[in-house]
Structure formats: C-alpha cells, structure tokens
Image (cartoon, rainbow, N blue to C red; front, side):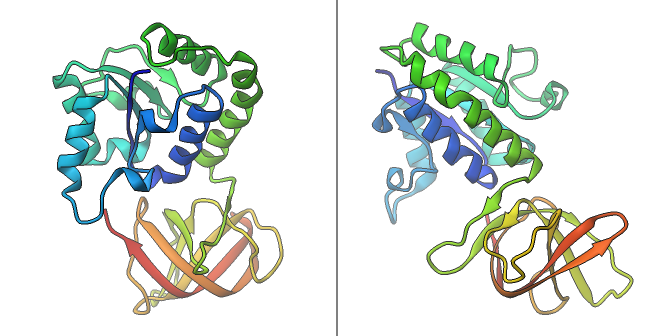
Amino acid sequence: MKKIFISYSSKDQKMVDSFIEFLQLGMGIRRQDIFCTACPDMLETGKAFIEKIREYMQECETVIFVITEQYLKSPFCLVEMGAAWGLSKQYFPLLTVPYEKLNNTPLMGIQMRRLDNQDDLGILYDELHRCGVLDEYHTAEFNRRVAGFVGSVKDNLSGNYLIEKDENGYYETTIESVRELSQKQYRCYGIKGHIADPPDKEKANSDWLFYWGNTFPDLMPGDRVRFKTTKTKINVFPDLGRARNIYPDDLKKIEG
C-alpha cells in the first residue's frame, strides 16, 4: 500500500482529525501509511520538523490537500503545495472553498473534489484504488460512514459543533469575528463552535469571548486560542438572538 501525505492548516485541526479517522475506518487506509502532523507521534521531540516534513513528502507517493480558507492564508501550506507540484507527486485537492479561491495557486485549472460532498468522496475512493493507495474495497464500511463524515465537515465549516475541554479544562477554537462595542475598553470575539458543558447550562445561537481589553491579547479572525472559563451568561440581541458571553479565567493565543 502506498503512503499518503496530508497537507493542511493547523487551524483546521478538528476537521483533519475527523478526516484521518474517516480514511482509516471508512476507506481502510492503514494508520502507518498516513503522514499528517495531526498525528503527534509522526514528529519527534527536539527534531527539525520542517526537514522531517520534507523527508516524508519525498517518501509519500500521494498528497491530499485539505484546502480551506485557512489553508490558502498560510504561506507554509502554499509552500507544501508547491513542493508537491515540484516533486511531481500524485495529488488530490479536496476543497471546502469556492473554486475561484484557487486563483494564483499551483492548482488553478486542475480538477477538484469537495470534502463536503458524498459523491466526490466516492470518486476519490475509487481513484485511490486505481492509483494503488488502496488494495481492497471496504464498500459497506465506506457507505456506512461517509454521510456522517460529510455532516461533520459541514458542521465544522458552519461552526455548529461542540468544543470539548481537554484534560486541563481548556477549550481550543478559532476566532471567527470581532464585535465592535460602544465601550471600547472591552473585547468581544465570536468563536467557531459551542463550548461543551457551559456553566450557564443553556443553549445559544453563538458563543463569544468577552473580557476587559488589557486582560488578554487582542485577537482577529483566524486566530487560534485556548481558554478556560467558570463563568458564562446568555444575552439576547436583535441581530444575534441568544448569544453566550464567555468570561475567560485564562486565555492564550496559539502561535503558528
């Protein structure tokens, strides 16, 4: 079985984790044949990770690009894209953005498939067999899992999913929007997803980080953050409906 390199933005980690699970359980690709930095044991502690990524790309016959808004904003991802092109790798671009977003990239004018489309994933499944990435068909398992995976991609893109706490009580997510306030000393940021088990125990249309300006860093759409909280509150606004204010006890911006 040939090896696969998955090129993606770290800001799409949740979706990539689901994709790797689908490749394994839905398509039958072995874990050891997937290189992706979402798999923590692939990159050794203390080693130069850029050089390691280059080595893995050379070893892998096939590259899958998970192309999102964040991917196209990442210089490092675009370098990976160009490297796959330069090494003449067999590549499969999977889109979550309009095709027009690929202007001025090496993939302009190339046939695309969509990550959020069952028919396109079925075509990808057949193509991976034809090029030798997959040795056997697991059609029943693929059909059983594909609808759920596509649904999870759509939920991820829309922000309609739960963010679970890690073992230290932190949530991790992406900033989606900035809300301008009349009281300039405060900061208010819309986040992607909804926090699981909120202190208020209620449902909300959207979740917002809210804090005094000098307490934590100023943020912008696309920033990745980790935070913990013990206090939240539901407010109702004409434009947002039921919105949850999250008052962080701690908040860190994730660099890279």
